[in-house]
Image (cartoon, rainbow over all chains, first blue to last red; front, side, top):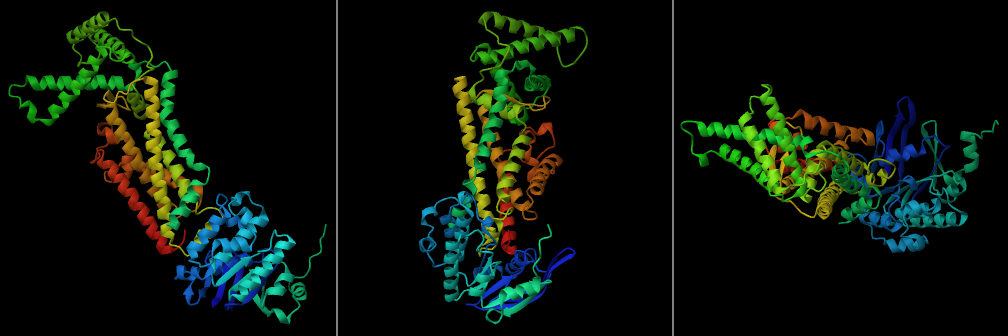
Length: 230
Length: 374
């Protein structure tokens, strides 16, 4: 169980998160929804320990994010976006590193085949398009085989075919018992996949069951629609 | 071994790894290129005057010692042996010049002649040093003139074709300050050590359940191995090129090491090369260790580089006796008379630098393992 307790974080005089409390069970998919600049990525960075919360704690099956770092990280995979890939390394080398580091039983070749990446598996990431890099990124999540997966806008830069493929992969990850938090602006995909939806509003989380709400209507209610004044 | 493989992929897949050998080759070859193109005569060089002073000093000291009524046995006194050895070395140098073993070196004789005449004029005019004996100088000028006449030596005004080992030794001894090497090592090692920490690629390693100390240890270890190999190969290539140009090796050729022109140490060119290259290797490992430690407290590339640079420059200048940083100034290691007295000479000084570098890497790795963060 990934548990955040009373988490708060801010930059100097700008509070971003306050009193964040939630628990994520294995096999559960949570959609994290908020407009740009609200703090979705900051929340994910706090959950993984890339940023240190001002208050509160994050534990994963009892392992604290800061005190039992290796045990915590072994059950979790998060890479914010494809900018975090090494431009000089190939897709296959990235996947091999992840498989070794996480001690995964999932084979690199199986993932390359599943994501239709064999044609560019040995191409350097720096020479890939955004869509290809997104495939590499998802491949790393798959090959890590971690218990909890945190995604930050995983569908950015993808064509409809790839979005369909990614959505299928997410469903299979859920079937395999992975606990997933996924921040996304694509409300339709969130509705299709998520069990619960977290709205980040005024530094706090508002939690809803996905089946019980109209996501678009709730989004408009919480954040409104800004008219272009131009 | 996956950690080693991943570190090697990240280290050598980029484009900057060849900057070190390229800059090293530049530093080693630049002085020689300048010398070939320049018009500097041997007599104008700092080391020449220093060597002359050294010989004079040793000659006088030896003469005074021999004139004492109850001299100590010659072989029982190591300082006297040392003086005799150095005097013999300079005599050997003169013999080589007289026999015209190497034509380019003959310019030394011409410069010596010029210098002796100058001192003779000063002594005759009653000015200048009390060291110089007018009769001795007159005798010496006559000897050199006779030598010049007897051997019909062609004297060159420029020093173009030094023996290979001597040429490279000269580049390391006088043309390139040791600080330049230290600065090159600081920037190169600093950038490579810090590479994992800066930029967005940091997150992948930071969030991997691997020993972060191991990440640093592999990286620093690979960097040291590559740096030492680069130093050895580039030096060998530079030496080979010098030998090809000169047509002779000159491994045993006497070299007067005198960066400041006031003190000199006599040694063979080959011996100096070995010592200088060992020093380069020790300095590289020490600076990699420093960079590994400094980047534990910052991930800003310029802050890290400037911090390492400041530590190296200030540390080598302050001269704390047992600080390994004091040994980053090559002249002070090879020629203690030119600066503060350091307790260690080569190769012990190199062992101290390398061991300190390894200890700093181990300390940084332990620190990173404890923090579990890059």
